Length: 115
Image (cartoon, rainbow, N blue to C red; front, side, top):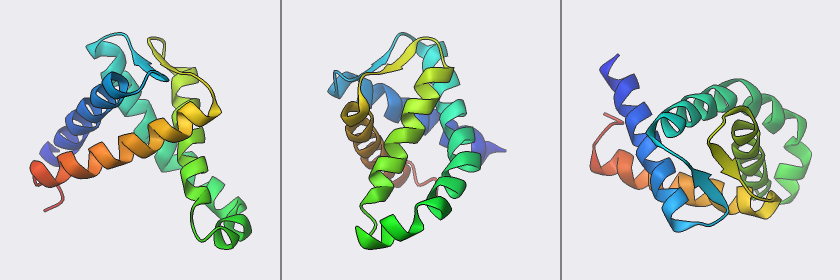
Protein backbone atom coordinates (compact mmCIF):
# COMPACT_ATOMS: atom_id res chain seq x y z
CA UNK A 1 0.00 0.00 0.00
CA UNK A 2 2.87 2.38 0.76
CA UNK A 3 4.32 1.78 -2.71
CA UNK A 4 0.97 2.66 -4.28
CA UNK A 5 0.73 5.94 -2.36
CA UNK A 6 4.35 6.78 -3.16
CA UNK A 7 3.74 6.23 -6.89
CA UNK A 8 0.59 8.34 -6.71
CA UNK A 9 2.43 11.21 -5.04
CA UNK A 10 5.33 10.97 -7.50
CA UNK A 11 2.88 10.99 -10.43
CA UNK A 12 1.17 14.04 -8.95
CA UNK A 13 4.50 15.82 -8.56
CA UNK A 14 5.48 14.89 -12.12
CA UNK A 15 2.14 16.28 -13.33
CA UNK A 16 2.81 19.56 -11.52
CA UNK A 17 6.31 19.77 -12.99
CA UNK A 18 4.97 19.07 -16.48
CA UNK A 19 2.32 21.77 -16.09
CA UNK A 20 4.93 24.26 -14.92
CA UNK A 21 7.19 23.49 -17.88
CA UNK A 22 4.63 23.31 -20.71
CA UNK A 23 1.92 25.79 -21.58
CA UNK A 24 -0.20 23.08 -23.17
CA UNK A 25 -0.74 21.31 -19.82
CA UNK A 26 -2.60 23.13 -17.06
CA UNK A 27 -3.38 22.05 -13.49
CA UNK A 28 -5.41 24.38 -11.28
CA UNK A 29 -4.62 22.94 -7.86
CA UNK A 30 -3.42 20.08 -5.71
CA UNK A 31 -6.83 18.35 -5.66
CA UNK A 32 -7.06 18.44 -9.44
CA UNK A 33 -3.50 17.09 -9.72
CA UNK A 34 -4.19 14.23 -7.30
CA UNK A 35 -7.39 13.27 -9.12
CA UNK A 36 -5.73 13.64 -12.53
CA UNK A 37 -2.83 11.39 -11.49
CA UNK A 38 -5.28 8.74 -10.27
CA UNK A 39 -7.45 8.98 -13.40
CA UNK A 40 -4.37 8.85 -15.63
CA UNK A 41 -3.22 5.71 -13.84
CA UNK A 42 -6.64 4.09 -14.29
CA UNK A 43 -6.83 5.10 -17.96
CA UNK A 44 -3.33 3.73 -18.53
CA UNK A 45 -4.23 0.49 -16.77
CA UNK A 46 -7.42 -0.24 -18.72
CA UNK A 47 -7.34 1.58 -22.07
CA UNK A 48 -3.65 1.71 -22.95
CA UNK A 49 -3.16 -2.07 -23.37
CA UNK A 50 -6.18 -2.20 -25.69
CA UNK A 51 -4.89 0.76 -27.71
CA UNK A 52 -1.44 -0.84 -27.96
CA UNK A 53 -2.90 -4.11 -29.25
CA UNK A 54 -5.15 -2.37 -31.79
CA UNK A 55 -2.27 -0.25 -33.14
CA UNK A 56 0.38 -2.97 -33.02
CA UNK A 57 1.09 -2.99 -36.79
CA UNK A 58 1.51 0.79 -36.83
CA UNK A 59 3.63 0.63 -33.70
CA UNK A 60 5.90 -1.97 -35.28
CA UNK A 61 6.12 0.07 -38.48
CA UNK A 62 7.23 3.17 -36.54
CA UNK A 63 9.60 1.15 -34.33
CA UNK A 64 7.61 1.97 -31.22
CA UNK A 65 7.36 5.72 -31.70
CA UNK A 66 3.59 5.53 -32.10
CA UNK A 67 3.49 4.71 -28.39
CA UNK A 68 4.14 8.41 -27.78
CA UNK A 69 0.95 9.21 -29.66
CA UNK A 70 -0.97 6.65 -27.60
CA UNK A 71 0.46 8.14 -24.38
CA UNK A 72 -0.64 11.58 -25.55
CA UNK A 73 -4.12 10.27 -26.26
CA UNK A 74 -4.31 8.75 -22.76
CA UNK A 75 -3.28 12.11 -21.27
CA UNK A 76 -5.92 13.84 -23.39
CA UNK A 77 -8.61 11.40 -22.20
CA UNK A 78 -7.63 12.01 -18.57
CA UNK A 79 -7.83 15.77 -19.11
CA UNK A 80 -11.34 15.37 -20.53
CA UNK A 81 -12.46 13.49 -17.41
CA UNK A 82 -10.90 15.69 -14.69
CA UNK A 83 -12.07 19.25 -14.09
CA UNK A 84 -9.14 21.52 -13.29
CA UNK A 85 -6.77 19.57 -15.50
CA UNK A 86 -6.54 20.62 -19.13
CA UNK A 87 -4.40 19.66 -22.11
CA UNK A 88 -4.48 21.94 -25.14
CA UNK A 89 -4.23 20.33 -28.56
CA UNK A 90 -3.11 16.97 -29.83
CA UNK A 91 0.60 17.80 -30.10
CA UNK A 92 0.43 19.45 -26.70
CA UNK A 93 -0.85 16.15 -25.32
CA UNK A 94 1.92 14.19 -27.04
CA UNK A 95 4.59 16.61 -25.77
CA UNK A 96 3.01 16.59 -22.32
CA UNK A 97 3.02 12.80 -22.24
CA UNK A 98 6.68 12.74 -23.22
CA UNK A 99 7.70 15.27 -20.56
CA UNK A 100 5.48 13.56 -17.97
CA UNK A 101 7.14 10.20 -18.71
CA UNK A 102 10.60 11.70 -18.31
CA UNK A 103 9.67 13.37 -15.01
CA UNK A 104 8.09 10.15 -13.73
CA UNK A 105 11.21 8.19 -14.62
CA UNK A 106 13.52 10.71 -12.92
CA UNK A 107 11.39 11.02 -9.78
CA UNK A 108 10.94 7.24 -9.47
CA UNK A 109 14.73 6.93 -9.62
CA UNK A 110 15.30 9.69 -7.07
CA UNK A 111 12.80 8.31 -4.56
CA UNK A 112 13.77 4.70 -5.33
CA UNK A 113 10.17 3.55 -5.73
CA UNK A 114 10.82 0.65 -8.10
CA UNK A 115 12.55 -1.50 -5.45
